[in-house]
Amino acid sequence: MKTVIVVGNGPSLNETPLEALKARGHIMFAVNRIHLRYPTHDWRPNHWIIMDRSNFSRTDEDILKHLDQGYPCWVREDLCVHRGFYSHPRLRVVRQCEHVDIDHNSTDDWHLDDPEKPVCQQAGSVPGAVQVSLLHGRLEPGDRIVAVGCDMGFKGNAENHFIKGYIDTDFFDNHKAIMAEKNLNHIWRIALANCEKRGIELLNGTIGGKLAVLPRVEIHSLT
Image 1 (cartoon, rainbow, N blue to C red):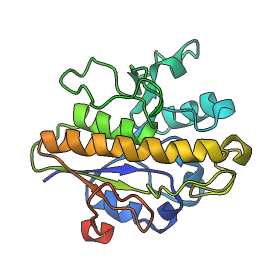
Image 2: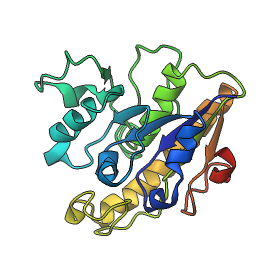
Image 3: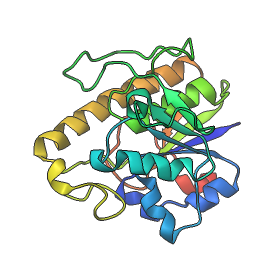
Image 4: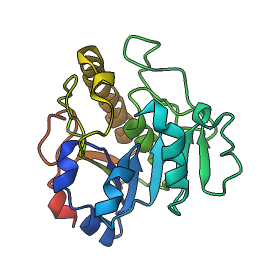
């Protein structure tokens, strides 16, 4: 059985045994500003993906940091435009659809029959990582994807991530917090349905948190 770990950036990441999970040989996809953890930890993912603008003013800088790390970097197509990243050997350009949130052209399915089709960008990088895992992870029926660090319970102008200053707090107001919660609950249901169709388990290994859509697995059981 193959296990892919999709690493969100919620507060519970500080309690998540990422090093032990990687030592067991699990493939790990991390997202967005996970590099803010790197100065104090040796752990690195096998893949990195960015499908949203976690901190728009630093997006270019963040992408370049990850391209220098030595692992494949899956980057939303429009974030590469005019940035000179296309020629980098570790860059994987991700074509994205036009879905953004639950009130804007919302989708009820992912189109995973063709790796050349756009990846749904609705709800950002973590669902994007699930899709890339399904498209390119060579998963077979009986394999599983486990989400960690996906705490949910977003609050406006608060620290919703594993480190203080992950984003500018005034960027994430109450309206954006409510919308993020709705979008992610919606997209996790879609993710679960798409995995079940393919015989892939999609599980929540987050320590604590409010993600109730997915069946839970005790993350230490995977170490």
